[in-house]
Length: 106
Image (cartoon, rainbow, N blue to C red; front, side, top):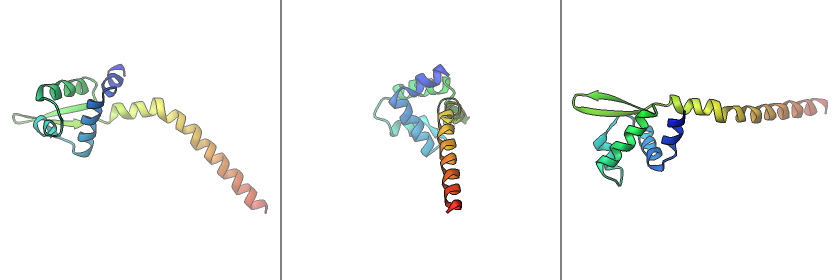
């Protein structure tokens, strides 16, 4: 999980993930065209994303295609975000039930 958070801490890597979300399965060349940095710099960022398991690669001939792997982000959601959201949903459900009871008593 530490590698995931470290990878997500960088704006360039988040931008690469956004690019893959918009158009999954891009080559290094395609990603480089959309980035204002050298091919070598993009490669380093992609390596960190791959090490964090945020992207997976598939070789198609001599070309390496990069795909977004949503599982680690889903795990972050479940562990860090989902548990806070549950309380909000429960509070809204309780409010809904109270309002429905009030309207039935009128």
